Length: 617
Image (cartoon, rainbow, N blue to C red; front, side, top):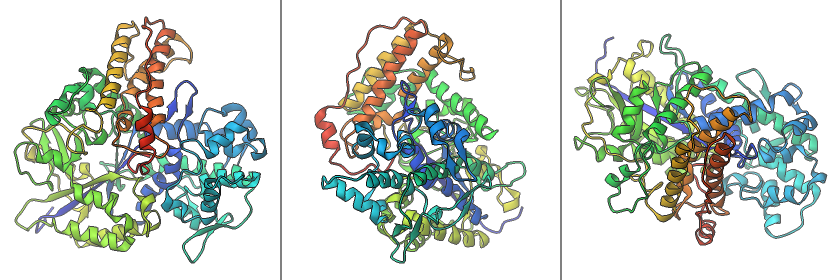
């Protein structure tokens, strides 16, 4: 393979994650955000690449996201949906699964005239109610916006208006492609909403008919079709390292999205947060290893192959965490440039990958923070074409001189949260199409070559990409522990509320270990429900779920969400309570504990005045 000059490779990683919204006591999802982003983002973010075969990139799909898609939106809906007739047997579905999936699906399928006070509360007043929509999104649906404004004025809503609200909560969260054209999905099914809605010359969407209960049933069938194709579209586009067919690398994160370095040893925060007070030491490296092993096993089940790379939750790394990844044959991981700037040797450029761990250890790439944040935040007020052109111009600044080695420039950000805030570019579609079109032209001229990390490491002769073995990469001698936020862990540990949550977690973990309920192996099969073996397994599952990063994110006053952060507090406390209940049912000896809510009324009310969180829902 001959090349006359060095190449600028662009490594784009779209991170797709939702925390577990599961209420283990009720076997029901507390929040709709897996479904919301499923129909708005997770399918089309991958499917769009089929239009641009020269574009290669990476998608990180977390286990907690995939398992909710698979179990609660695909498996439970499938027996009742007729995809050809665009219908669902609502009566049979509710008889089997009412209260066991997404409660807003129950509302859509229940006749509106039968709504009780609890149904109306969920629809209109729940923290995540059917009017909980970003101002940018709802402004594109004037009829939906008018209903929200009427409710906001305290006016009485008619039965028909309630019917329309429950319908809009689904329709408004479909990707614009589904609203504007007939779309054939990977499995051959068709989503065609043209009889329901039309985009007018002013760019706004308006209904073409009066909403009926049948339309509410039909929209759930459409939801099912999209949700059931999310995993297949990623599988279809996956790059095969043997045949070199496919465009995307699919990776994952430790199972419940924990901050791995803090599970290994919470005192790791002392290095990057020397002035913060910390809770009692949480030190369970075996749990960190279980979280990695469970994720790999689940990924193999879904995608029939092991992931070559992992995105550590929140880009959180430490040398000890890298050792666990390496033990489980993970070839590469990624984090933020501010970690690189605090690692040794000093002054290493961000546009190269590095080896960590010695020899043929693990490759680590560092995202360019400014470029990533441009997509995530800066371009929200830009026109799509202008944003894409600005991004490309910034990328080209990294073009290497001919005498230098190939460069690998990395861009990583959430692949679902930015788009709903793009004010002049509906769902970021113009930006993405312009970006991929321009990068396709640059690929043909070899100006910029999009690549996945594994493709860069091992090479791809079909695309004239040579191998760049890990052993040939410069080495990180001392890796700074921290995350992609502030190059430390202060979003998850180090203030009063976060530390209290870690104290609760440590107490529960110690009690479970002493209970006599043995931890299952990651490869263990789940026993029949309600047996002692099943209860033991689920006690540990609740423990591992409580170790997830998302609960700690919300503690303290630095994160805000309308309605307050109390639901996350309840979820965390509920998981800990489940550990004790399930362990006792499994025959374990657990002490009596009462975990009181951590979030104070004052901090919750303060949070309710903040802006809608853009980085996790």
